[in-house]
Image (cartoon, rainbow, N blue to C red; front, side, top):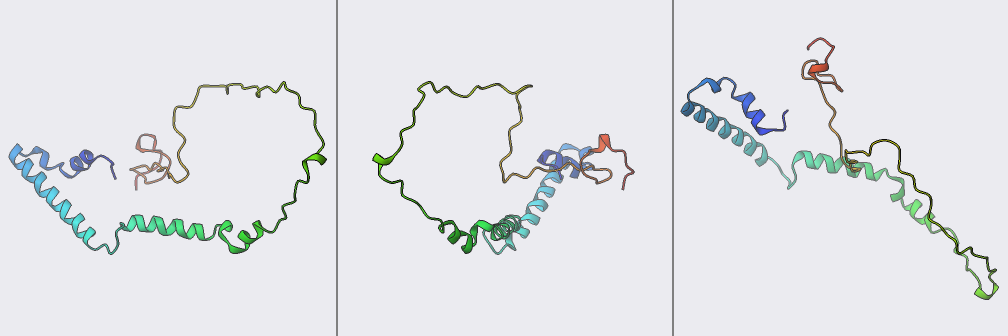
Length: 149
């Protein structure tokens, strides 16, 4: 699937591109009408505010969070089992000699060229590339060494 609507339209209108301009525009109008009708029909079947893709993603995240150990009641109560000891009277404290010469840590720039790509967020999922010829992952058609399917 392409992400650019122009590429999608070009692939659908390959045959119609040879037509005269008026006929081409009519073919584009008919195609867009059909496209919108199909999507409107699919959207009218939805029973919730979210799309089925959005509901599936939320359902998956909720299921994953249910198995997260930190949300269990036993773990929550165990966090408050420990004792908090008092620090005592401040007159009984021992005084430690402090060196006033506190310097910041030595900072060295990392070797190499600084990164240009941003670091993705935790929730972001990167799309893996898939060859359009052999349908295998992690390469494209230009670097494909396999037989087409």
